[in-house]
Length: 299
Image 1: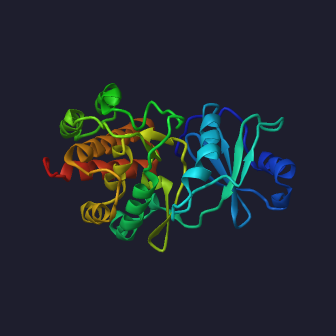
Image 2: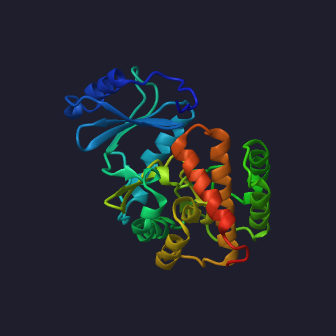
């Protein structure tokens, strides 16, 4: 059984049906079907075209509001589907937190696809990253864990490497320290998804069709999202990704070293926080193998 942090509020089919009756009566005749649960939110499919997204922990209420506020703006001009709120549900007596009705994005999570079958995703993923990473205003949501200088996460990473039981910890520490030596990002703060791993990517017929879970949305160092090249793809498909991406900045050696640092950070954090989640552990193990196999000084 895969364990998640305990929810601090009751969410079930009866609650979702009640919210639909009061907030979206046109959908109330559909029986909600549980379709996914993560660390922070739970999803119920409602009919063929919609889903309800609800925060299962108190701190995630702010994440839902961030998605409601910013995704409609940021999704303009993006070819890839995103879960833009069609209805921004407000806290109410039945459920004292914000919640959203979003489009249902057909497909499978990329985490469920064999890595060797992901070559068709590389170009679409590159285009999403390049299109999404636009200059952000000062009012962009802050996130102490994404988009920041890697030095801010040094204590966390060293702790993960000591406690997560990773056999390649010495090699990973060398990669991490190389990323720390790279100059910090000194360009404009760019919009970031913040958690662009295969579990948050949706594919259909081998092509990227959707990106979900924007709860870590923030602005900062674009290397944070470039890390998806190691989190999601193998070496050959990374080449396709980097050939296709057209960012507003130079993909120089320091940025790519920092991107490897972000990929490492996310993978060891997964192994520390979710060691019994097979999909997430698979992402982490893949990423570590890619990083260790990469030739140092490649860039």
